[in-house]
Image (cartoon, rainbow, N blue to C red; front, side, top):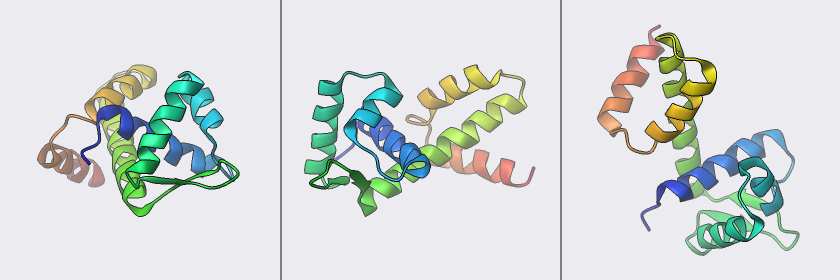
Length: 121
C-alpha cells in the first residue's frame, strides 16, 4: 500500500513518541498532534491493517519493520531539511514547519544530495 502524507506523519509521530516514552498509545498520538481521538483511531487502525504498526491488548503501539523504515526515513528527512533551512537563516520554528511539508514531496535524488552535502559540513 502506498502511504499518503498523513500516514507518514502518523508513523513519524509514533517514532518520535516511542523515543521519548516507554509505550505509545493512540491518546498520546492525539495529544502530540492535536488531532481528534476518532481521527487518530481511524488512522492507527488503517496503519495496523496495512502492517505498519502493531497494537497490543493494552493499546500500546509499536512500529513493525515496514513502519519503522518509513518513520525513520521521514524523520531523517525532517531533521536534515530543518538543518538545511536553519543554515540559510530560516528560524527554527519556520524551518521545522517547512521541512514538515518538504519531507513528503522531495525526490530521493535531491534529498540524497542534500544529505551528502550536510554530512560533509
